[in-house]
Image (cartoon, rainbow, N blue to C red; front, top):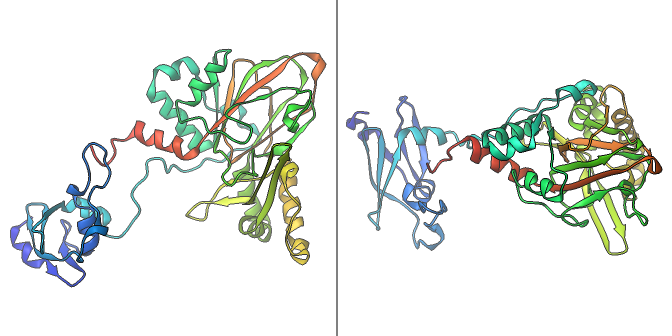
Length: 376
């Protein structure tokens, strides 16, 4: 860019106006320009080391010029020089959010999706980070994947989960074993049918990603039931918009109580992202607390809640399949609704070992695997 364009820079009280490479003119606030100076960040930790709270005076530019394709600012008082590539300034000119490689469009699915579920070999994942990225991509887009060739060991699940994040404990602990218990504290620990649900809705922030590693499954019955809750919610929005509004705007109470814990939270049944699009659901009839909402309001809310629950059971959405020993199903606990048909406990052995990781950490791993980041 011609140096003569430096004369087109206008220094104002709270910021400056500068031309960019495309010929447009844009205003930038002085605080923003000083706070995000490239020298404000430590090269090793990548954290901001400049502390704007310690400045006695507001930042004001003493002078500014354009050299080549770089804006140079000299700050009044300190004499500090800040240099910004004009291309970088253009990225922030309109106040848009930083592009996120993990912000991938969701693909919604229905009852015929089982044969199309993304599958990855555990041994190959352990050797190939690019496969881990593809696995996480499937989780972000479709919310579900199956890991095959799992080692028949506790360590096998641990090392698999840690490929995308740390183990996220719940009030059940870091791991749980889904098998028939003598004194069960959860319906999953019985041979009874398990209602369609998302896990641990009684936590303020339920864990994001669930792992269920099948160690043995030789019983009669016990079919796995899975569906895309976001797909159902999208259809509800079209078919019953009033119901959708109630379920996406109203918080209802959930609980999980036993001898040594008493968990309580409030959640919206339908979750929306920052763009107002359906990102998931929180549903669990057997952990819904007594609805402490005005009785007149419940005249509308209960029918909406029931209509959605009945849609979840529709053959249009519900996958029925059998998880086999050596497979691990991994799914988004804030989107995928799951359950189980009853089985005959005496007919064989059924053992699923489970744990959780967080969605945010999974997305962090995806960004680290697929992009260089802004400091490289």
